[in-house]
Image (cartoon, rainbow, N blue to C red; front, side, top):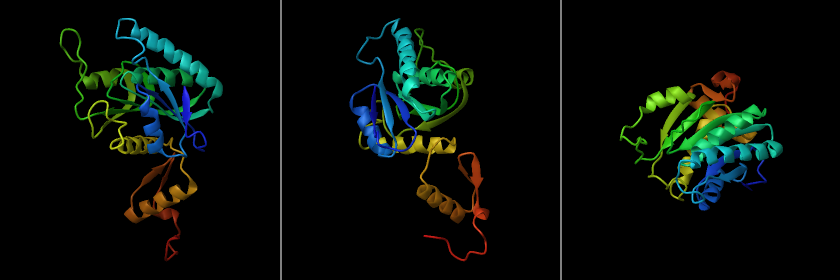
Length: 229
């Protein structure tokens, strides 16, 4: 367990990674104001076997116990890629059971069979193919979504499997995650960035969501003939 961007002022994001270089790349793309708690899956620790799934669930319970002792009460996002995806959802469920305010969840190249009530962003690379059973039959993805996820969205990443954290792709991933958190009202912005976004919204003349509040052009007095810098 590591924390990156530890001097950041925002509530921390939790992510379950599979390789050593991934946390550094995502932390850089998110920016120094966003702390990132990096956990690892069982990738390259335990070979694929019938009991690795059970061990991953036990690992998630251990992570949640440790995190609950040190985390603030608010966590905007818990996520994971590939083998880390089900671990991330187990962690988010366990943290909520312990009274933590978890905003949303996200996974990459996975459709975990783990129930969650959180808003969930399913990210898939351009070469994603649904997992198949031993008889070669792939489950209906929409039916899986309906069975396990209370609220979900899907996004397409501009890369193939395992490239999400490469320097040329990680910024797009960070932008996708940030946009999702903002839409779900769990992204903590600075006053300066919120004002800038509000002014952009006024210029477009459309509704925009900021947390639980919707703002539009009426929030600024119509008598003002020019906007502040």
